[in-house]
Amino acid sequence: MDPNDSFREFMAVHQQSLMRTAYLLTGDPHLAEDLLQSVLLKMLGRWPKLTSPSAYARKAMVNQYISWRRRLARVTELPSAVPPDRSYSAEDSTIVRLVMLRALAQLPPRQRAVIVLRYYEDLTEHETAKLLNCSLGTVKSQAHHALARLRTLAPKFADLDELDDLKGAHR
Image 1 (cartoon, one colour):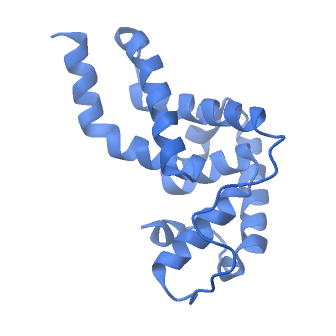
Image 2 (cartoon, one colour; image 1 turned 180 degrees about the vertical axis):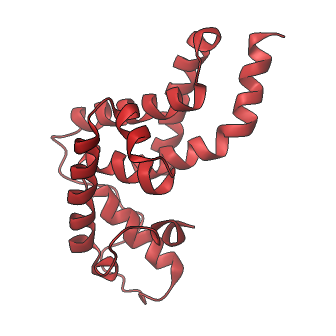
Image 3 (cartoon, rainbow, N blue to C red; image 1 turned 180 degrees about the horizontal axis):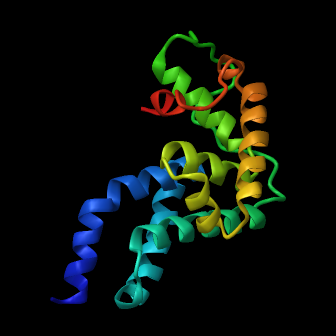
């Protein structure tokens, strides 16, 4: 079998979930496409050697995203799909998704990566720690601090002990 064929098969199966992860990390569809494309290029060059392509892709996306954020740390403005002068009903599920995405965009890169991997990608704490190359305690503390920050940024979610409903807020 041609290595390109196996790469195409991988993409056919995993493209949507990888794109969702990229979007949740970046909060912007165009940046998500750029992030995924850059990771796929890296993967293609290493394809025959990869033992766990989906784990490699997620880890590479998180690392690339954090790298991008470091370079853009001096920028104080964040792009927003929602003009600040509009008001919405908090009951609308679309608005709930937007509120959560805006709150996610305000988290530090590591905290955002932990939330995306743990609650959107359904990875365990151990899998998340391995992917982020950090300790289990770091994942737990980052998740704790991120959840506390999300409760502050998005008061609608203040009563959540866990973000089990977060997926419902995204979909």
